[in-house]
Image 1 (spheres, rainbow, N blue to C red):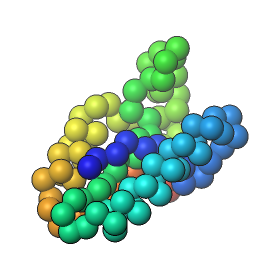
Image 2 (image 1 turned 30 degrees about the vertical axis):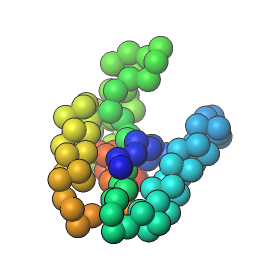
Image 3 (image 1 turned 90 degrees about the vertical axis):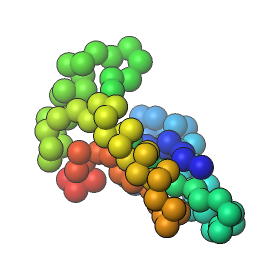
Image 4 (image 1 turned 120 degrees about the vertical axis):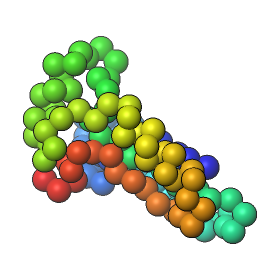
Length: 107
């Protein structure tokens, strides 16, 4: 199982309260299901940061967000695909949540 979550669950903000709570549930589900379903089924997640513009926003919007990241760029879909494939292929990983945030969790 590969879940999609958001890096904002690590430091929630009030603007999107319901969304952050829901994604926090996905985080908890990932860890709990990994334990409950092992050894037969592995459960992991990718937590997305600045990957693509949200609905109603354009590329300039995400470029402004990315300027505050240590890597100073938008992630795009490539890193998401690579992380997903890595988690799906590695049969010795379960209960992990990989942050794809350009180092945003460090600042």
